[in-house]
Image (cartoon, rainbow, N blue to C red; front, side):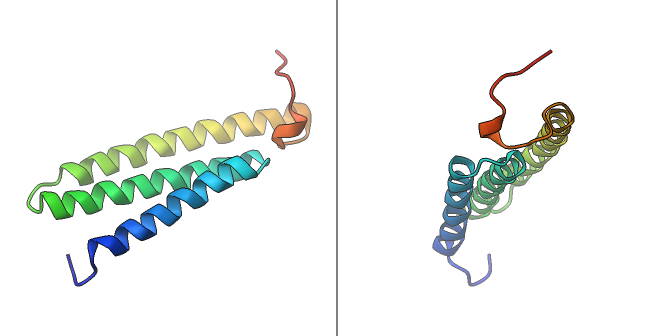
Length: 104
């Protein structure tokens, strides 16, 4: 690792995670909620990569786990966007407060 201390990575990751939590709890737009979830997952990915680099410098377990999480989050995002598009086609709105029941 370069000259950047571990605390700097952890501070950035913590800020990213709590901005994601705030966006998830405070926003009512489904796309904004989805972006907040992705921000939280990216903060976790950063922690995996940093701790792998610090604790096990010669191994790549944390990096492979991070790649696996990125793949899962890409699939989750595609599915969530498909659901949001379907909700918009039926309800003509993507705000959580206005979607009060699911119809089949």
